[in-house]
Length: 154
Image (cartoon, rainbow, N blue to C red):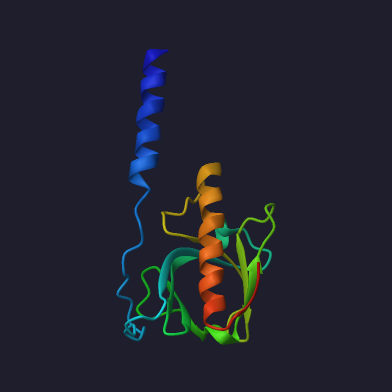
């Protein structure tokens, strides 16, 4: 029994400290250098088409807002997957029952669902505490989009 408790504690520490990394500047090619004083943001993200499950069909990468543009840079890609002016986007929060926190819509992307986080996004293991934090990150993301003219419903 003591071994099980010890292993459980080690696993807990691994999950807390191993996956709590914050997003660093991705240095992704195709993004314009940031104008000093402009609001910018960077999030780990999973982008999923409408009706798809994020763990099995989502594109993983980074979302960045810079100089009024939102760009998604898929992992291991040379160039951003898409870059859209923020003022051409519509977005909002999904319900608590949805698998992704945010929906976005534009002529460039169509309607997509997003999970955004400053932390590592779990693939197969669910974490209710992290899900609550991801809802907070989603609010931050939508607020920044609204700052640049996106039509956002909170």
